[in-house]
Amino acid sequence: GEDVEQSLFLSVREGDSSVINCTYTDSSSTYLYWYKQEPGAGLQLLTYIFSNMDMKQDQRLTVLLNKKDKHLSLRIADTQTGDSAIYFCAEVSSSASKIIFGSGTRLSIRP
Amino acid sequence: DTAVSQTPKYLVTQMGNDKSIKCEQNLGHDTMYWYKQDSKKFLKIMFSYNNKELIINETVPNRFSPKSPDKAHLNLHINSLELGDSAVYFCASSQGQGSQPQHFGDGTRLSIL
Image (cartoon, rainbow over all chains, first blue to last red; front, top):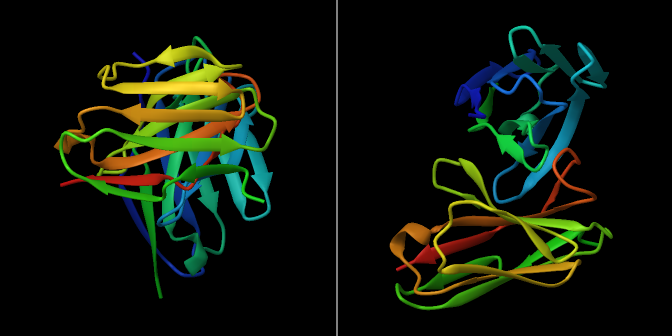
């Protein structure tokens, strides 16, 4: 079945780069997403990548997609305290009727 | 100018009661969703509606009944609340189904005593 997996926690030092990893199972996924959830708020779409792309860059964010390994990563350059949040990876199901979310990675920043 | 708004933000009630959560979006989207987020932050889709028609109905107890009076509103009514219903419920909307990015409300935190 469709499944998206992420590690639960990541701790980085302020100013360093954060890399959040995700694996998915549906090889026919057309879109893959990264959402950010801050405490007490809903999910906010950060960025997305089409399956025919290998990389997408948007300011401090870089998304890498390895279709062969079904691996997606989100790199946040120069991590700031405001980046503390839970980051969800998501794929579009093969039937394209719904989005499957991973369990979320909680990113914490240490000084 | 909240895009997806849910009410109430917090809901505390006793087991066995019936309650409703309301959701409205002003983005002009035609598809709306309800998600349940448990204490471990795992997010699971419950329902989706496209132009007031039910599209997705995951394995959810029939105590949960969504209602979409128009494409800008999707309400969730829950009968006979149980302890396991305690969670944060998120409404979301998108233009089109499936692959389109979804916009989320801020959630309704439901606590069952």
